[in-house]
Every structure is written in C-alpha cells, then in structure tokens.
Amino acid sequence: MHALHLTINFQLPGCTSLKEKRGRLRRLADHFGRDSAIAVTESNFHDQWQRGQWSFVIVGENNRIIEARSAAIETFCHQLDAYVIDCHRHWLC
Image: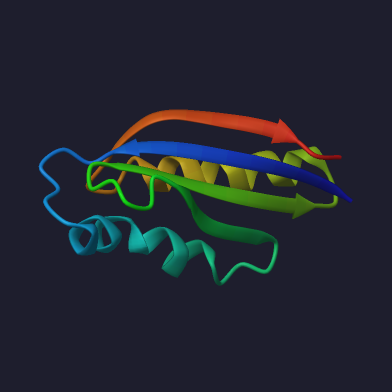
C-alpha cells in the first residue's frame, strides 16, 4: 500500500466572509469525500477570508493509481472559484 499527502493552497480574491469562502471550496469535500481512497480536509487559514489550504491523503496499491487520483484533484481545483497558489506532494510510503 502506498500513500501520498497532497496540500493545495488557494487565493480567493474578492471573498468577503468565511461563509463565502467555505461555499467556494465546499465542492472539494463534496466531490472527493465520497472516495474511500481519499481523505480530505481544510487544513489551514481557517479564519482568513481570502486564503485557503486543503489537504488530501490518497492511498492506493501502486503509485500510478495515486498519481491519477492526485491529477484529478488538481484538475478539479482549477475549476473552482479560486486561484491555486501552489501544491505540495509528500509520499508517506
């Protein structure tokens, strides 16, 4: 079993409240929270309106499967009403 920790930082220009911020990024948990091979959570900048950080732990039988899931997450993030500032990957095993 292999695992990857993926952290994605967002900028949310024009965001005026925490409620709006969570509304813009809620689709991450709604979409990827259903996949039993992916754990997803808001991981930083909880009180900042125009910044967000979400973390994902992706598990799979081999690196190819994990890379495909990671690419799907990154592609999905670019469709949100937010800018992706950066992504960090850390292989856990």
